Image 1 (cartoon, rainbow, N blue to C red):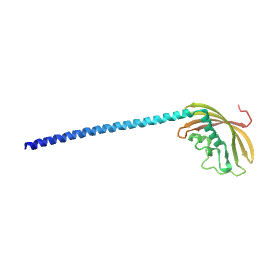
Image 2 (cartoon, rainbow, N blue to C red; image 1 turned 30 degrees about the vertical axis):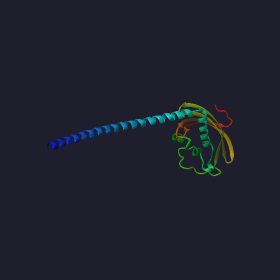
Image 3 (cartoon, one colour; image 1 turned 135 degrees about the vertical axis):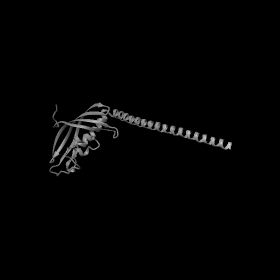
Image 4 (cartoon, helix red, strand yellow; image 1 turned 120 degrees about the vertical axis):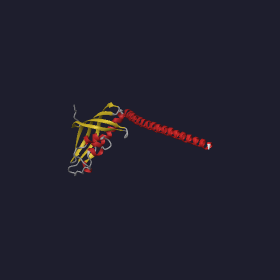
Length: 197
């Protein structure tokens, strides 16, 4: 009997010890899970900060006159080369070259969907034949250009040469690796040969 009581006491102590050990391990596991969650959040925050810094660095490296002018020329070619007889308008060929804000400045407010093709009598054809781009860096992710765009506009097979003056604000889009038109203001226009003050 005495052996049975000792065995029961040992067994009871074993259960209590096992329960205490299991409780300790469970608390340690909960602490580790909280620590892991906190480290995971910190890691995510650091990754976001790193991505932002890399985007700024890429923008700064690309905020060079040659790169900005190259991207502006792509925009100008899309914007000034169109034929309404083909259903093209200035704003239909600049998707991917302007921000959402920029698109509101290059597209008329009432323009919805795909433009209709013009009849041959009312068609307007525009061709960019030269441009002068004056570049100013603003910050690592922003630049400004002043543009003199020289174009030939043909209506009823009668060409007329003009120049358009534009003030364009650009922002760098790291995902597209290009400068995007964010704001465009028409400063003025004149005959192609006129000097503009």
